[in-house]
Image (cartoon, rainbow, N blue to C red; front, side):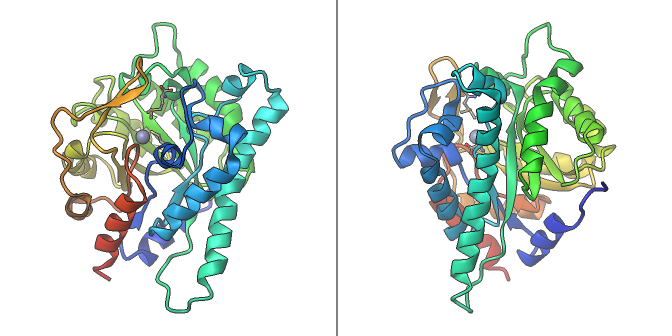
Length: 325
Ligand SMILES: C[S+](C)CC[C@H](N)C(=O)O
Ligand SMILES: N[C@@H](CCS)C(=O)O
Ligand SMILES: [Zn+2]
């Protein structure tokens, strides 16, 4: 099967040149009362309270998100099995993460049809694929250090089955998130080819210093690999400080012709050991509205928020980006 082209490009056009991605899913689940002190992190909610996930998707759609990202970031078959679930049950939870977002999107779209003057776009559902570091739950999605025994093949094996199950569940695209190093980007690009994945993907890296991937490897090297893959439609940065983003968009713009997505966190820093967010050391919490405009002008065509951002952040971004229409 060939790659289904056009859905993302159409959406960017319908959104007036910049599509709005949703905000922190785990963050908003926690704001509504969920607790994630667990190696499964937000994926725990797929077991304990799936209705809450659908509610959060709807909140982001109401706020103006053109793309909702599923609750599968830290949902893995290995992670669920280690909690005592069977492989079948684990795969059903992965499917459920996609179905919850599709249902939220479809219900919301049906509802807004009653208001002919609404200015929402028909949203897309991106199935989240968190990095291997997210599964390790040791903070390594922000260090890029996966231990000395990691290999390309091990990373492909880690990602393969989850990828197949998520794709079969029918999302519009795949969202690889917080990729911290070159080896994982290469593993994903090879896997997308080997599995002949028929939907587009974005691959978003994390960055701590605003210059390189978290591993210290250059984005020149990382994007060189992704530029060769026609399965990867979009590249970018997520869950990194907003302060880093403009510089990184300008850098990416020189390194790739692909669309660029950015959805930073609030600037707070994840302490992987203590499992909590620490205050930002340098980001002063400037206005996301102002920043989002700058990121768009620098060359990003998909913009949203990641951890510690909320529906109100997305509403501000959506209003400022769509005000131009
Ligand atoms: C994006 S981070 C805040 C997700 C949680 C992390 N992988 C952990 O489990 O510690
Ligand atoms: N899609 C995930 C990303 C975590 S970095 C979330 O919003 O919770
Ligand atoms: Zn995040």
